[in-house]
Structure formats: structure tokens, C-alpha cells
Length: 204
Image 1 (cartoon, rainbow, N blue to C red):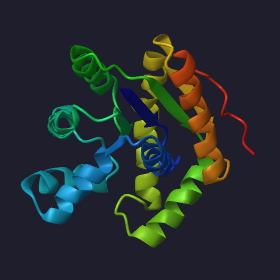
Image 2 (image 1 turned 90 degrees about the vertical axis):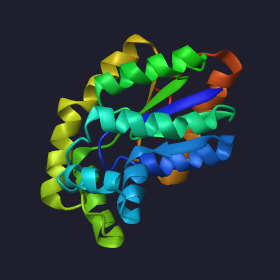
Image 3 (image 1 turned 180 degrees about the vertical axis):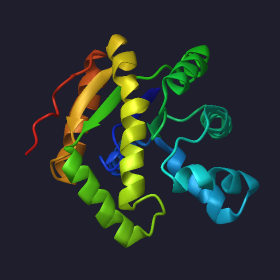
């Protein structure tokens, strides 16, 4: 089973790349952000409970995220693999995810860390907010989300780095180029069970 994580700061392109790599390798794309936005669109109690956090660029509490993700992931016990997009976002979430997958004998294979200049990230999210109407894509919330990433999600670099599972990918290149670099790392892993750590850091 091929289980992948794509993480990085807001606006780095992890959602786009997660969808592309999931489609390429017939994996299930699990986006926690999209799962909770869908709950909000449906008007469920869960959606109402978490919208405050999402609108204000805050992390949804770990117990809520973990419960939702466990329920959804449990439906896909016999698929070729999973792509976790936007999860984990905290060290605790990463530890719990490892325990859950190790218990089933299907550990994380590769963790892709998307690298993008901060100015580019902010411009992307502002433009995305104009097109999509996402509540968390305005300048004030964007800066809060960046702070949350620095204080929480960035800790995952050390956690997965110690496991020797991280591959750094530049998100500054065109979408198709980034996708090919991610696929290069995946193909190498499938053949050798080893990870190319910096194969995708070239910007152009």
C-alpha cells in the first residue's frame, strides 16, 4: 500500500498536487480541509462546530480532526493507497496517524514537503480567494494561517525527517513540472524502497 503525505505552508499547491498524484496512481485523496468544508456546505452540526476555526485561520482541535479522518479512512482498507492532503498538521496528529497505520501494517511511505517563497504564497492565496470565495483566503487570515504553520505544522519536518521519509519539492515550478518531480520520487521509491530527499528542489 502506497501512503503519501503532502504538507507545506498554505498556498503551496499541496491540494492540486495531491489530486494529481492520487489520480495518477489510483490512490484515495483525503483532504481534511475539503472534508470539513463539505460538512459546512451540508449544514451539519460538525460543519457548524468547525467553521469558526476555518474562518479565522486556526487549527481545528486534534480530537475533532482525528475522529473525522479515522471514520473516513476506515472506509478505504483495501485501496492501493492514500494521499493525505492537509493532514497531519500537528505533531500529535502525526503520532496518532503513525500508530493507526502501523497497527494495520500500512505505514506512511513518503512525506512530500512543498517549498514555496512566502511572497508567492500570499499572492497565490489572495488570487485564489478572489476566484473561489474561500473564507480563509483574505490577507488578515492568510497571515494568521502562516503563523499557525510556523508554530505547529513546521514541526513535522523534524518528526518525519528523523524517520527519513521526507522528500522536498519546490512548488515554484509550473504545476505539470511539480507533478513530474513528485512522480519521479514515487517511481524511485516503488523500485528501491528508498526516498530521493531533494530531487524536486529546482525552482524552474
